[in-house]
Image (cartoon, rainbow, N blue to C red; front, side):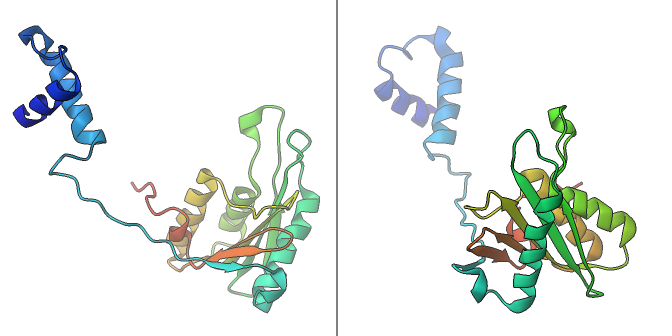
Amino acid sequence: LQIYTIKLRQEFPGQINSISRRKFVCSAAIHYLCHRRLTPFAMEKTLAITYHHFDSLESLPKADKELAQAARKATEKAFAPYSNFKVGAAALLRSGEVVSAANCESEVYPSGMCAERVLLYNLQINHADDPIVAFAIASVPAERECYPCGSCRQTLLDAQKRQQSPIRIIMSSQESATIVDSAEELLPFSFKL
């Protein structure tokens, strides 16, 4: 702490020269340790995320393209009178069945539900023994690829953990798509009990 106090005296002249200012010295030293990366206890690590980007939906593998189209079709079922942002999700199950859902908004804002979670909860109740192989998301308007929110990312990861097999996730716009081979790629620092 003395080394950092000396450095702080150089940066904050006149503010750290009395004993009555120990509290300032301690909090400033902690700030220095945390924000100036001078702490010998921290290790810098790199996080890499692997994904596949397709500039055209036409270049997607056939099964992924069909699932993205099913998600886009599901946007027609969305109830989004407040945001006018319609989201559709479609899941390909191991049995070959494709199930879809859309977002549902409410006047009471937090009571609405994203398309991804509507579909995931439906699958958990009605298709618990038929694991999800792939999961597609689309939106209208569709200028940008549609990525899941944090709650949906956690719920996708929960479903993946329950079924003990990866879920391929296809996030599409009207022209392009990004694909990850596992929900873990979308939420590397996930909540765990």
